[in-house]
Image (cartoon, rainbow, N blue to C red; front, side, top):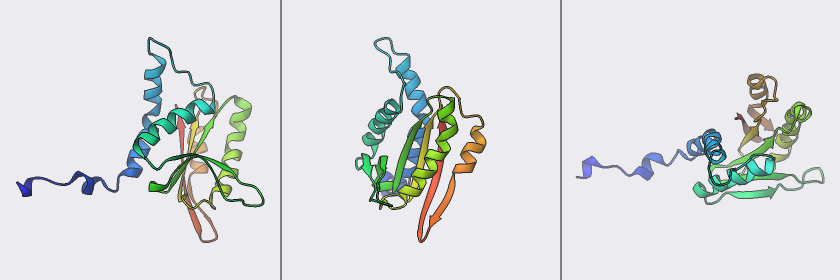
Length: 166
């Protein structure tokens, strides 16, 4: 009956950003499952481990996702963006907090990234995904609030979101 159905694609067309957020939010649960497998456990020991797993999941949903794409040269150097998703105009920057000394530097690393990513054509939103499994960041709430928000450089605007997991 025509009056009793709806096209799901029409209803869900603006939810790609929501789906990406859900992937990022639930990744720790997926990793816990992999850690508890009987046959070979997946260990998170580096930024590369998080990066590879996250790219695998993101790519399975967002076909246009690209891995490790360089920005244009800016001030005679370019930066490498971890994951670019043009369909949602979003880039992901992944950080793995290695030790307490690195925890003290993560915010500064992100500020450099924020300044470099303005020049990328597909970057209107940047999600900083910080994996802090040892809970070395001293004040997660203020860390997140100090980094997130709208940034503007000239006419270019960049919305920054910050997620700290697990």
